[in-house]
Length: 52
Image (tube, one colour):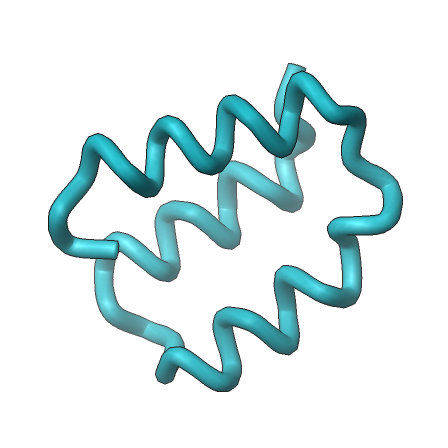
């Protein structure tokens, strides 16, 4: 299950509120707390959405 923080990050990325560098910096901040399944889910969601 993706946390609220991850869902908020994804929403901000979808809306274009982050530059690429800012998005990756923010992702690096919480990525160490994600499980393998959550990382796969995020990758799939990003790959399916052309806006990312």
